[in-house]
Every structure is written in structure tokens, then in C-alpha cells.
Amino acid sequence: MAESPTALVAHKIGLIRPMLDGVAAQNTNIARFMSVATREAKAMVAQYPDVNVDSILMSVYNAAKVGLEVNGMTGDGYLVAFRTKVKGEYVRLCQFIPGYRGVLRLLREADTEYKHKLLTACVVYSEEINEGRFDLYEDETGQRYTYKPILMGERGAPAGVLTAFEECSTGKRLVQFTQWSHIQKVKRRAMARTDGKGPWSTDEEAMAIKTGIKAHSKLLPVYQSDRFARAMGLEETLETGKISPVPEELVGVVDAEYQDIAAEASKSEHDRPTKPDLGDAEPLAIESTETPPEAPGSTQQGKPPKGRSEQKAGNAGGRYRPAAKPDGFPLFQNACMKICEKNGLSLVRLNEEIKAFGFDEMQKVPSDRRDDFLAALKKAKI
Image 1 (cartoon, rainbow, N blue to C red):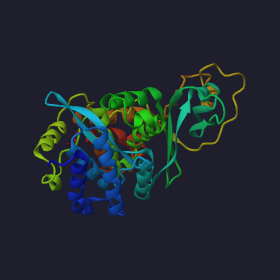
Image 2: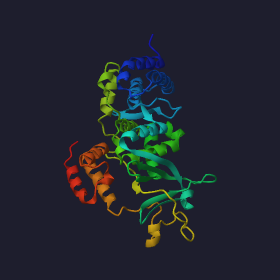
Image 3: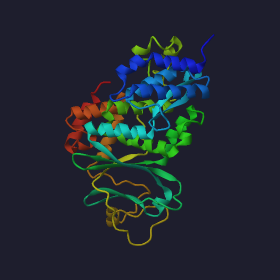
Image 4: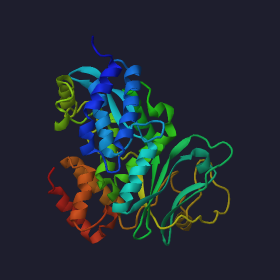
């Protein structure tokens, strides 16, 4: 008599237990990990009878490698069913994606080595902007931001995600505001593959914050952390439909059908972006978060109050207009991204080239060395 799908997936997960001992992240409690993963895998098969069982196996394997539990109850990570097209036909596969709390845990662990600490990550709402509670501005000491959330009352529609990191060695703050339009693009791509289900449908705010963290972290040294970068790559599967090929140690466990699916979907270019998608986010170097004095007079509807530099210049600016860095950093950053796009270089590779050039991050490359770096980057090979 053939095994039921739930019995089959439990049996196969048991087969990879010896392999997980060798690839799991340090301090992973394998016994607990296996128990929770088996429970979640059975629930996945029960909910989606047509899901490929071996894709669940791969998801559990990937979760062990990044050191997160397959546990939606704790927010570490989720098993999510999605559809992707292989050889002209859609198949339903499973993918592990890190949860909001899982991303925070990986960032805390990466901070020990890469010295960038996440200070805040939150959704900013339209009424908070209309009332002048959120502002990005620049004064004589540098760029700053201020944010006073509405704790009681109507906050309006989401406007974007604010993220702030601190460089531990210098205290310098790096702030990014990812507009809600970019968040919704990511959500739509994911929801289209998950039939409107999954964490985007149940935990939109947490997923939005995680998307903002992901967009910001791509510009920081923390993205060089193997576990963190791998976890962020797993989540991109829901946007692109691209999956990783079967590792050599699992070839004897997964069947030939899934190996063919994974080999095809890992190299095809269907329905996926060909360049890093940073959306509408723009990085800002922040020296402090103190609140400036209130601007005199009333604030125009739909616009934050003027920052100090804007008051001095008499320019009201755009709604979310970040002040440009005086040394032309945005132009340098855009030039780097265009070279990476043209030459097929990943953001991880960009960070490696910056480090090889003698600097820890892009912001630290001085203006008189940027042309030299761009010339070197053009010669970099995939």
C-alpha cells in the first residue's frame, strides 16, 4: 500500500537528519528543529495535496542552513506554497522564507562581525506625514530625520517603511525610507504566485517592514553575511519563481522529477527581474535623531514641515524628498548599480569589490577615489 503524502514527507525529512547535522548553523537544536519542521511539513501537504513533496524537503534543508526554525508561530520562518512555470507548465512547490523575527535574529548575529546595528524599522502612515510628525531634512551638521508616531487615533494609509542602522564604530546613522508603492510591487509579485495566500495576506505589516529592511541592508556590509544573504535570497523565490538546484548531498533522497524541475527553474528567466530591485528607497546618512523645532506657521496639507536647510533656502521640496548628499553620493551609487546591472554583478559581489578597494562600505569611498573605483568595477568578472 502506498504511503500517504503526510507519511511520505515525514519519512523523507527523517532521511535527511544525518545531513542536517553537517550543514545546520551553529547552536541549532537539531532534535527540536526536526520536530517542528515535520509538523509544519505535514500541515503543508494537508493544505496543498498537489505540492511537490521534495520541494518541502529542500525547504527544510535551506532553513537548517540559515539557522532558522520552520515555525510560523514564533515568526522565525514559514513554509509557503507557490506556483512557478517549468517547461511551459505551472507546478506547485514549497519554499522556506524567513519571518520578521527571524530576520531580526540574523541581523543581531551578523552585527557581531559586520558592526551595523538595526536601530528601528517601522511603517510610517500618511496622517503622521500630514501632521508633520515625520520629516527627512538636512541642516548645517548633516542629514537628519524626526518621527513621532500617532499612538492613539487615525493614522491613515501606510506611506512607507522607515529603517535606521547605526555604524557601531563611529555612531553614524544610515536611514532609508522605502515608499509604500515599492512594498506593494513586492507584495503583488508574491501574492500572484501564492494564490493570494501566505504571510502577505495574514501579516502584511511585518512583511512590509521586512521588505524595507531587505532593501536597506543590500547597501550595507551586513549583506556580506552568508546566512543573512542566503535567507534574503530564499524570500526572492516568491517574487521571481527561481529556486536553487538540488545540492549534491540530497541527490540520493529527492526523486529525479524534482531534480529536473529544480535544474530548470534555477536557470530560467521567466517572470523575474534581471537587476537588483531597490524600488523607491534612497539611503540617507544620519548623524542624530533629535527632533528639530517646529517650523513657524501652518503646514501645507499632504507635506511634511520644512527641514532646516529647506527653510534657509526657502524651498518646500517634495513630499518625501530626501536631501541630496553634498558630495554627490547618489550619483556615485547609481553609477555602481548601472555597472552591476550591465555586467551581471550581484550586490554581494559589489560589496566584495568595495572591500577589495580598501573600504568597508560604499559610503566610505571618498569623492576623489570614486572614478577609480568605477573603472575597477567595470573590469570585475562574474
